[in-house]
Image 1: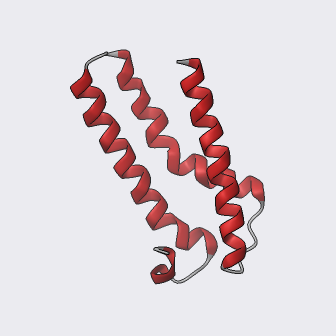
Image 2: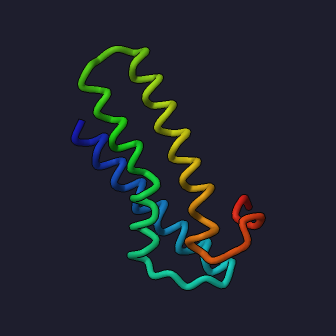
Length: 93
């Protein structure tokens, strides 16, 4: 469990670094700390969904995990254009 939590934190840090790198493509200048904070915001459903593992049933984990991943992708899709101050049509790329 601890290793899984640390892997999620590492994934958030890598995603924040990727967002920071991608921001230069769109001439946005957010700091690395803001990028990691945005990645943490979008990954929050995954952290909260991990609480479903306290009740160890496969179907519950699958339903909660799929919902959490879907909402995380939605938050990233909707929030990224606003975060980088770009056109929402360009945000999909």
